[in-house]
Image 1 (cartoon, rainbow, N blue to C red):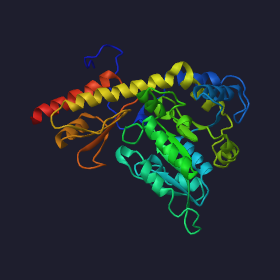
Image 2: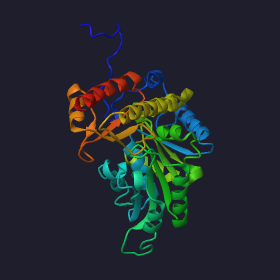
Image 3: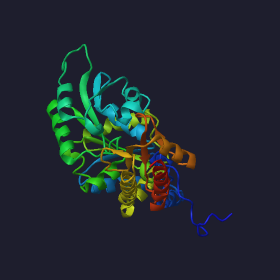
Image 4: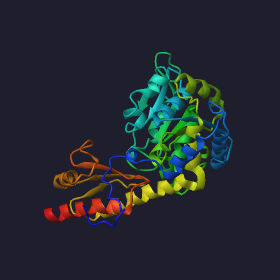
Amino acid sequence: MNDGRPDGARAPSMGFSSDNIAGASPEVIEAMVASSVGQAGPYGTDDLTARVERRLCEIFEREVDVFLVPTGTAANALCLSTMTPPWGNIYCHPASHINNDECGAPAFFSDGAKLITVDGPSAKMDPAKLHHAARLKVGDVHTTQPSCASITQATEEGGVYSLDEIRALGDVCKGASIKLHMDGSRFANALVSLGCSPAEMTWKAGVHALSFGATKNGVLAAEAIVLFDRSLAAEMGYRRKRAGHLFSKMRFLSAQIDAYLTGDLWLRNARQANDAAQRLTQGLARLSGVEVLGAPQANIVFCRLPAAMIETLLHAGFRFYHDRWGPGVVRFVTSFATTTDDVDHLLAHATRSASQQA
């Protein structure tokens, strides 16, 4: 059946619910296949894993310790458990992934550390509120104690912490003698949005440990824990093994991260996703009855749509989250695989709906 597209042309993708619904970059798949040839040392003693470690040291402009794991939840929970005793507090924003979407993993991995939410606008933790929270009942044996803070970069609302904002939180953590963790599940999206160096966005601003995300940005299943505070490395090694995340055939995780970093694939993928989100934002903002919420800086767009437009898009087959955050509130997420045609296809349906309601 001919649908009007040239032979071999793909139909526009209809999924905008998450960047997890995209596949993996061809370079990543090819690297995994290539790494399967021959033998290699187990448990991360292979040459490919060593190469990934060296490359991350170069990217972050200093010596770091690297621990590869298969999921972002494992990366976050292992980082936080290594930075927090069971009687510790982990400060995070109420909207953070560790607070809402990890099924208690930080508390489980840390044997009971407590998540304390610290609010702030645009899903960003407020430094003044963190300063206050980290000084409550310090030294009181009857209550859990300040241990670390965790920020999400990019945020769950599609915003990005500026370098000044990260430094302000880093200064608070330093003053309170607590560690700072960065959940970088969309690290590359935030980095290309700010146009800064990885070092500037992390350890130079006071970050002690990073969950370096890759799965949302073109990798099959691999994340990197990057420790800038190298005193955490020995415990991290034991915790990763105890948690069941030390892969015997580590080269298959390393092959993914190696391909991800080669030729700046990770940055190109992030720019593609961010650019698609900006195109979508600009197109939606021109439509009557549509309100873009906030100022999207990465690859997540929140907006308020008329009920009729939501129904039109759903009926057409588009997939996205809606009404979770309030009546008419919609979240669109673009990925490295989202094309201009994909965005324009959605905008065309939204435009027709808007014109019918005018």
